[in-house]
Length: 209
Length: 209
Length: 209
Image 1 (tube, each protein chain N blue to C red):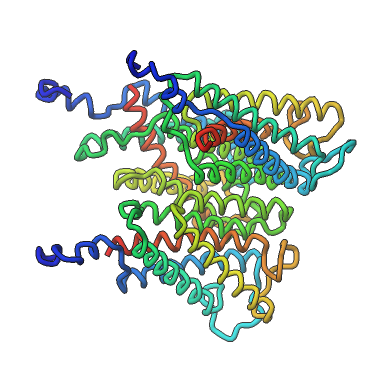
Image 2 (image 1 turned 135 degrees about the vertical axis):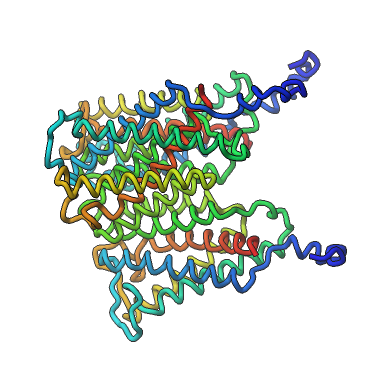
C-alpha cells in the first residue's frame, strides 16, 4: 500500500501465487477422492468395467485410477499457477475462495455422475447434454487463455490415456454408449471441465498458503 | 462504530433487517407451494407413498405436508434474519433481490424434481448427483456461517421428522431407492440446499418490507 | 469516430448498441445451429416426429426448422437491441461478453437436451424440472422488463407456431409426453429461456461491432 512497500521485489513476490507442498497435497487429495466418487458412478452404472485388476481395488476403482486423477489434478494446478506467475499479472485479485472451490468441485462431480446416469438414454441427447453442461462449467470458471490451456492439456492427456488403456483391454466402456476410439463421446467434455477446475483450484491453493 | 454513530438507534434499526407479518406470510406461501410441487413429483414418480391419509389431500400431498414445509420456511427465514441482526452487521448490503429469489427457489425445486427423476437409475450415481447439485446450490448462495446454520437446522429437523414419520408408517420411500433409516440417501442434501435458500429468502423478505 | 463526430448527437449514437449485418448473421447462425442440435435430440429420442417432409433434411431436421429458429434468434436479438436503445440507457455497461454468450447458449442447449432426455420419465417431475431449470436460466440472465418481453414474444410465437404445425399434421409430439394443445407441457419453458438468451445475445452482438 505504501510507497516503500512497493520498492522491494518482495512485494511483487508476495502477490505472485506459488504452490506449497500442502497445496500440492490438497490438490492430489481432491482429485483422488473426486475421481473415486465419479468412477464409482461409472462402475455401478455399468458405464465402464475393469477388465484387468492387477492392483487392489479402492472402493470401486483399481488403485491406479485415483492415483492418476490425483496426480493429474496436482499437475494441472501447478501448471496453472506457473502460467499465472509468468503472465502479465493482471489476473491477481481475481482468485476465487473456498465457496468457489466447493462449487467448482461439486459441479464437475455432478457432471461426472450425469455421464453415468445418461447410460441407457438416447445417446445423441446424452452426448449433447454432457457437452452443454461442460461448456457452462468452462464458461463459468475459465477467465482467460491459461484456463483453456489447462482444459486442453487435461482433455488431450486424459482422453489419450483412456483410449490407450481401453485399446489395451485394461477396461472398457459399455457397448450401448456412444463412443469413438473405444471411449465415450462425452469423455472430452468431462476432461475439459475438469481441466479448467483443476487449474483454478491450483490458483486458490496457491493463494491460501 | 463511533459513539456518535450509535446515538441514533433508529439509524441502526433502519439498517437491521426485520421480518414483517407480510414477509412471514410470503415465506410460508413459497414454502407451502414449493413443497406441494416437489411432493407431487415424489408421489407421481412413486418415490414416496402416503400410507395413512387422515387429512384431506391438497393436490398429491396430505394437508400436513405443505403446512410443515411452509412453517419450516417461515421459521428458517426468521432465524436467519435474527442471526443477521445479532451479527456484526457486515452482511448488510449483501442481500439479494427478486431475481435471486426466483433463481434460488427454482434451483431447489429443480433439485426436488431431480430426486424424483433418479428413481430407477443406478442409485450410487443418483445419490452423488443429488448431493453434488445441492453442494453447488449451497456454495452459490451461502455467504457465511449463519447460512450453514440454517442448512444444518433444516437437515436435522427435516430428516429427523421424515425418519420418525416413515418409522411410524405414515408414508414410505420406495424399496428400490438407496435409503438409510427409512428415508432416501439424498434427503439430507435436499434439506441442506433448502435450508440455505429459506434463510436467504428470509433476508430478502426482511429487506423488502 | 472522428473528433468532429463525437461533438454532436453521434456521441450518444456511439454508445447506443446497434446490430450490424454481421451481428444479424451471427445470431441467425447461432440459432440455426443450436436449433439443429436440439431438434436432433428431440428426433433421436422420439420426442418429436416429422410427419411431412416436403423439404430436404438437414441433419435430423426439415429445412424449415433451422431457418425458423435462426430467423427467430436474429429477430429477438434485433428487438432486444431496439428496446435497449429506446430505453433510459441505464442498461449500458451491463452487457455481457463472450464467456457469457457461451454460457447462455450452452445452458439453453442443455435444457433442450434435458427436454429430450425426460421422455419416458414420470411426466409431472419431467415438466417441473424443465420449468425450474428454465426459471434458473431466465433469473440468471434477464436484467429487466425488456428481457422478459423477449421471453414472452418467443414463447407466444414459438408455442403458437408449434401448435399450428402440430394441428396441421406437419409433425407430432410423442403420445407418452405430457401435452397441451398437441405440444409438450415443457415447451413454453424452453421458449422463455431461449427468448431471454436470444435477446441478450443481440445486445452482445451489438456491442461487438
